[in-house]
Every structure is written in structure tokens, then in C-alpha cells.
Image 1 (cartoon, rainbow, N blue to C red):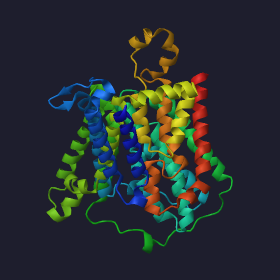
Image 2 (spheres, rainbow, N blue to C red):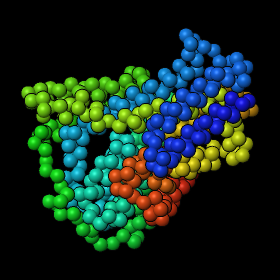
Image 3 (spheres, rainbow, N blue to C red):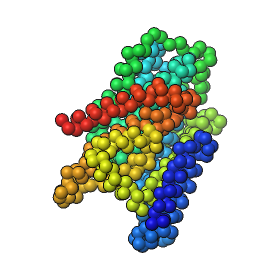
Image 4 (cartoon, rainbow, N blue to C red):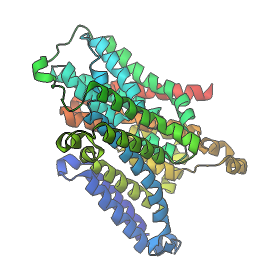
Length: 452
């Protein structure tokens, strides 16, 4: 019992260090990895207390750890491939294909244009990358700081809404997709409309009071000179090949039935070979920043290590049985899957949605149709937990969009906050209620579609 409680205490303390990353000045990846190692160490050393010897060992490594590590590795390799492709496109200035086509100065027009570009681009790339691209664009379009903060806040809402309905648009949706809880076709069909409602409600509320034209920064102070390292042909080729590689992943999985990370690595390898051939005649100094070897230095490897640490830590609690207890409590106290998911979504605005979804995946069973058929009296409750069940689909929506309610509640929000130095309480005052209205409206749309 002592080991069981100690594991929970270590996880809570570790999570506090992650949440207080900026005041403590300790990178969250370091806290996550340390938490994971300590939790698994306590689990192994206290196995007799927790399981009465139920943890088997193979070659000195707990079997459960090897099982969880295999699942986590699939997510990490997928993310590493996706991030490398995006950085390669960015190194070739491929995103200018989009940014050069935005010319309006009207506040309302710009808001709707940026929001919809973000919404669909986030589904094709991911919400974090899209936010970084769009906030960088805002610096070239909006001069006044607080007005730029406002557009950045709407970009966060749009990025999280767009990422929720795509299997590659948000880390949590990707986790559910890789875990086989959801399929590509079903998640797009079931979540596109709720995600669109989640964006449209804040947009309509804002449009009622947003008037006039904005002042753009002077071009000499803002627009960077186009690099001589790439030609317009190279930028367009790498951009469309990069987007194509990301969009091709669900197709690859459907056709081959191989895990998604294999499709992502396939796309990366094709793009890698293409860029090597494209720049083979350039000198090494010009070629290096445009190669995969060069852009790998720009990939956010600390985020990869953070995901590794937090997912390992959560898997230790799943193995020990903590998550089963929480699942039972939520079922008994809230009573239905809709309330549980809405609560998880709101909680994700305070607590990182990655461990929340990882925990939910471990807390609730993924059932086969055969298992459901033999469930008997529990079949009514368990029907929501088959592949493409309503629980998993609503979890993808709630975890993906609920984090918009606070700027620290999503990776997109944290990125915007860091890039523009957005004040936490300014966001709480100006954006949070808009995000909450959109989140609840989208959830209501999903529930209405599910019921009728």
C-alpha cells in the first residue's frame, strides 16, 4: 500500500514541476523523464505490495514496461518524422506559398481568413506547427501588440479546433488513432462539424464588434528578404511534397495496414531523397541548412523527450492500477460518457492533455465487437468503447479543443504565449470565454448528432 501511494505522490509532484516549468526554470522534459523513472522504479521495487508478485520479468526488464515502451515508440517516431518534414518545408521557405497570398487589411476579413487557413492547415499538419507558422505570419500583418495578441488567441482556438478532427492534427488525436481507438474516416466524419462549430461560435461573437482596418508594419521593418538559397520552384515543390507526405499517411495505413509511423517515415524518406537530389550541385555551405541533416538540429527534441517521459509515467500508473480506480470513480460520480469527456476537456485547460488522454486510454477498455457481444448486462455502457465508439470520438474532440480555454492548456497556446509574450490574465479576460463558448457549442453539436 505504501508503494502504491508513493507512486501517486511522485507523479503529482512531478506534474507540479511540469506545470511550474517557467517559474522554476526547469525544463518540463527533465521533470517528466525523472518522474517516469522514479515511478517505474517504485513499481518494480514495491511490486510485491502492489501486485502480490504479479509483475513478471523478462531478461531483467518488466514485461509491462516493454509492452508500453513499444506503444510509446510508435508515437515518438511518428512525431519525429512529422516535425522533421515541417522543418524541412520551413527551411525551404515553403510556407510563403500561403503567406504571400494574404493581402487584406480589413480586421474582420483578416480574422476569418486567418482562422480558416489555420483550421484546415492544422488538420493537414498539426496544431502546434500551424500556430508557429501563423503567429510568425501575424508579425508581418499586424503592428499593434495587443491587437496581434487577439489574433494570436483566435489562431490558438482555430488550430486546436482544426487539429481535433484530423488523425494527424493533434498529438492526442494521433495517440487515439495509433492506439486503434479511432479510424481516419470516422473521426473526420464525426468531428468535422463539431470542430467547425467550435470555431464559428467565437468568430461570430467577435465579428459583431470588430470593425475597421488594421495598420500593417512597414515592409522594410518586417518582411525578410527572400533567401537566395532556394528558388520559387524549389519552395513550391518541397511545400506540396511535404503536405502530400503528411496527408498520405492515413492512406498508407489504410492500404498497407502498417502502423502510421511507417507511413510517416516513408514520406520523410521520399522527401529526403528529393531534397538531396535537388541540391546535389550546391556547395556544402548552401546545401547543409536545406538538408534533413541540417534541419534535424531545429526539431524540438525536448518535446519528444517530454512525451516519452510523461507517457512512461502514465503507463506506470496504468500498470499499478491507479487509472482503473479513477475510471471507476468517474463512471460512478458522473454517470455517462458525455459528462466524463466534457470534464476531461475542461481539465485539459489546466493539465496537459497528453497525459489526460494517455490516462483515459489506459483507464477504459478498447473492446472488440466479439467482446461487446459477450458483455451481457454491461453491454449498454461498454458499447461506447469499441473502435470508433462515441467515447473515443468525443474524447478526441474534448481533449483537443478544451485546452483553448486557458493559454497554458494546449501546445498551441504555449507556443503562441512564448512567441508573443502574451499575458496569461490578458488571455483569460479576452479569449477564454470565447474559447469556452466554442468548446461547449461543439460538444453540444456532437451530442446532438449522436442522439438524433
